Image 1 (cartoon, rainbow, N blue to C red):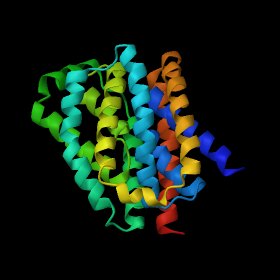
Image 2: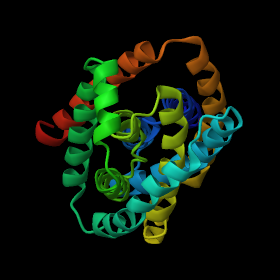
Image 3: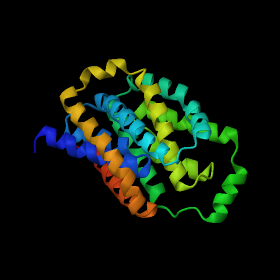
Image 4: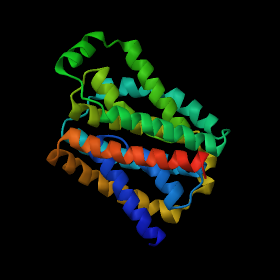
Length: 253
């Protein structure tokens, strides 16, 4: 299979994940860029941020038109992660590639396990509403920003559960608002990674990004046809497989 076809297929899958789930695209983009398209981990994280920024902005527009974005809360949540994203992005350039790969795989595995767990009950959601505090929300936003900068992930696969459990958002609002957080954090991290663009093959990046943007629109429609829990479980299974492969590659190959 040619590199162009691989880039188009991988980009479409990334876009579908972002459009349907409000996150998870970058968790698939980084391993696809490394293992399918031959990018180094450092170049892959930078390329992933470019892809995810463009795709998330597109998906954000689609969800905003549908009224699924809570702008004030999302902006505050995202603002807490801007500085951590920039600082972690600068630090990532100084870490060994094996450390970045192992950390990425570990975060992906933890996210998958959380997504496979039972959904919070109505009682738990009500309790989360009463207990949510601005400091807790800001801390969660800062943590997501740091992950974005360090590992090249948008943080949506963690932002959606956080918005549901910490701020008691319904799922559609959490998905739409997470895209605002992803776009903001990714842009902040990219500002510190100008040197990382040197290792990017733009002949591969362009079709990958284009396919991801188109896939995001299809993902938005897909989310309306299938239940959220089903999509979440399928994505979590794929995520666990990717994490296991990356950990085996780091420690046993």
